[in-house]
Amino acid sequence: MLTRLMTTAAAITLVATPALTQDVLVENQGADELRGNWVIGATVTSTEGERIGAIDDVILDNEEGNVTAAVISVGGFLGFGAKSIAVDWSELEIDWDGTEVTLDLTREQAEEAAEYAFRDREYAPAPEPEGGTGTGATGTGATGTGATGTGDTGTGTGGTGALE
Image 1 (cartoon, rainbow, N blue to C red):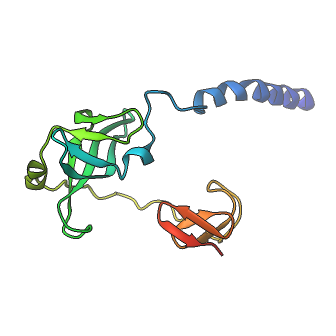
Image 2 (image 1 turned 45 degrees about the vertical axis):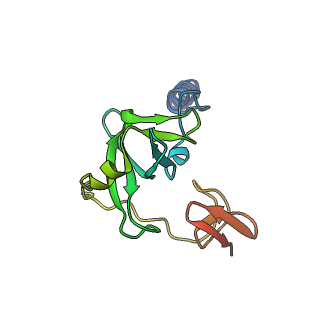
């Protein structure tokens, strides 16, 4: 009896798993979808073609799962003295692959705008797993300065660096 129950439970799991997996996984990017790394770092220009700043971050609505605002770094020189402002995501005109971002705002208006007030996190994120190299969610390889990958040299969000 116990063997039959275990066999039935295993069969149900095998049949139900593909359906559950299909609801969770997304297999490819839609034509109307942008990748985050396409827009983060993108230069924002006014409708007159003047540079306003660059997108540093996006604000997400946790309940709806939508991007609500773009955080733009404006002013300053070589990153010093810049401030962050946020603009409504729907006000950005972004081409189909995120290479051109236009906003109906002048550089002067952006520099005069109030700095965006970020809220503090209530809880710290979970600590990184211990151990240096291995396989897992980030792939295989060793971590160097600013990069994770395989081989002698890697590039990543943090920059480039020789891998150990």
